[in-house]
Length: 465
Image (tube, rainbow, N blue to C red; front, side, top):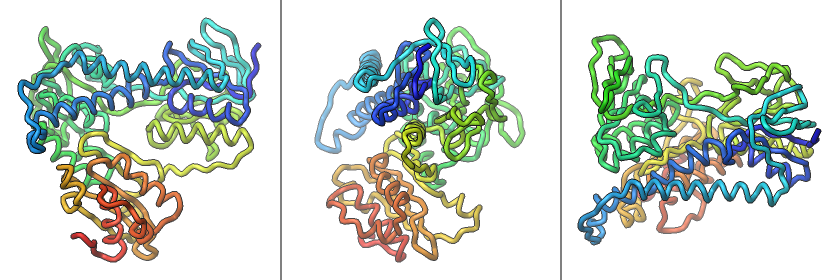
């Protein structure tokens, strides 16, 4: 039986990053992956392919709608969907190949096949050996959630996985769920001319993110792409025909249902932890009512040498959160003393303009009864934004009313996914709103809006507003 310091089940951004970090810290590591390709959902059917299509569709939309504003005239603009998808597939192939290279570079043993517990220290790989792990890490990620009344057939009723490889751009698409995945999928196809309907059970899009950002997202989808957004509604049932689908939708508060005809139905109602087939009971483990594996503050399960990370445990279901979890476990096993704070994990929606947030939202602080101040700065007042013709959006900085300590930062605007890093660093190192204002950021840049919003939060006014 092969023996390792650490055996990892799952090669997504949690598992493969943990494997690399553990190997760098001189632990012997084995990585088990159920599928032929490494990288998990994120690299194969999630983060990477969706961002490839988001970028491609944004370029097409920009050429169609905005190039002429820059003095660039385009004639006979055409869309080659098959080529766009092929480029996405090539990006995935290159990224997965990079992970495979890193496994070899760091001398990590990789085993393909379904892994399941034989005991608390032994993992059997289907079609392969049984591995002994002095420590074991469960990093099996999540799967799309489903609705009991909306059966997914992967043909007309699909998840984001199938949406990324549709044979054609849909003429009509109904999306159930107004969270991050639903909004990003709407953005891709809305840019390409698809007629969109979004059905969201709650009274807002993007639950959990800043309310002002969610409202701006609603305006973007409706104004730019003509999306029909039904908030406070539920999809009750579907009827599949030869050429499309009829979805019966009803108001959440009660009332008669009404039919909506569409070509495809995309179910985007969240994700659920994936632990099926692990035989957790043979290791002495159970899951909670939401299917998650309980862990302590050091990510240890009920069996101290078995750890769990990422989407199978509490906390945000984000690829970079899983990576941070993985690094934490690897460094703990190597005798280091890392720390985790999920409040410092940013959330990003990769539409355009991008949406990003980190730390507290106003709603969370109101529930806690904690006094705070808010500073906002609109992109339209930014010289760099005007030069780039990207003036939609804002930066919001939230600071403690008494201490001026940075509590949260929320951005809707060009390059928000990158500039939110300033907010992450500020939270991580205990910065005040004034500290953010004092940063000597380059001019002209989008990041200058952060300084302005921070000054507004700290002293009540911005310089360029």
